[in-house]
Image (cartoon, rainbow, N blue to C red):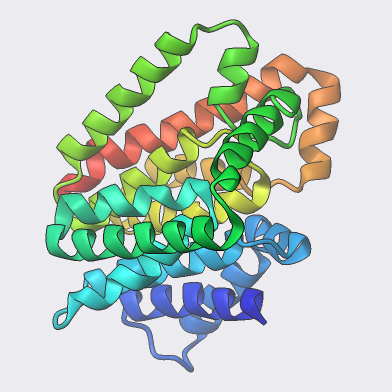
Length: 276
């Protein structure tokens, strides 16, 4: 039920943002595209909290962009940040574009975390950190794991270098994310980039960046840009079995290509979307 609600939310947000009529062919196409997207299908198959988090981030993006009571975006943002580590990017996106909403969302987030610690016990924090670290190290070389940080550390890149790179990513995202679309797009990708592990279902969080880039590309009228965007979307839509088979052919090339594609999407959203 949660997965179906998330798919409906993601599709509804795109339809509303596009201005399409609900019964139009365009709306049906959007619904089919979202429901059949590989990261969404992976989220349905896994049944974890990532897909609901993606739906809540999309809902927050929609609410914060509407006129009226934008404070309603705070609760879905806070819950999304609690459900999945890569979704944490929604909070700095709010701080950049709507500080008051961000303050409420951060407060709700901290309350939810405190409630969890109070219910389970303080040991849950250290256990969570330990589990995240062990999982990142264990699956750093897994073909279906798209995480950049764990892979970089596994290849021998110093932790200080990785940390400095991510600080630079966050600074650039903050500097360029001057609009709601730009902030949500760039920080969504940044959240994925700093994630310790990144499975295919996490890529559902790329919905906003791809939607924003698609609109900007159509406005620009460049067929080359549109083809590039389609290629990037295809790369993040491959089933896990295909990624594994490609890794058997050339594991280093496959891992580098996936990481480079994620960095490319971040760079594109960060240094072009703000002018849209």
